[in-house]
Length: 93
Image (cartoon, rainbow, N blue to C red; front, side):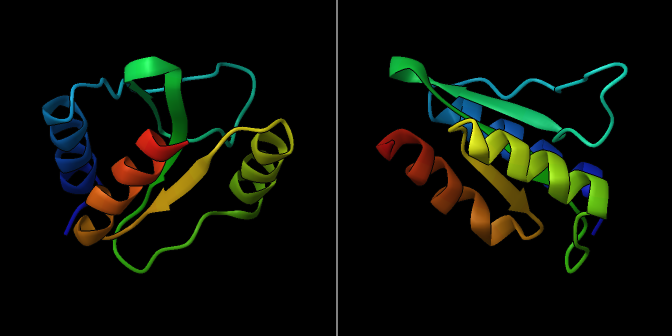
């Protein structure tokens, strides 16, 4: 399965849940997550999308830890089965 497929399913599921999940780009600050998930009531999280079984690169891991240290939720999504749980966790925070 391709990363693009996982990413598309994520976007569709977030939209069906009443949120948006735009592509997140940060010129000049490499390693940031692929998507930012924005849900009702100001709930948000960053999501790194990977092909099944692939792990984030060291720079990506460092950026994830930076975001977490600032109080943001960061998820690594590499299986379609994770999408529902991620959305539930974002809505619960």
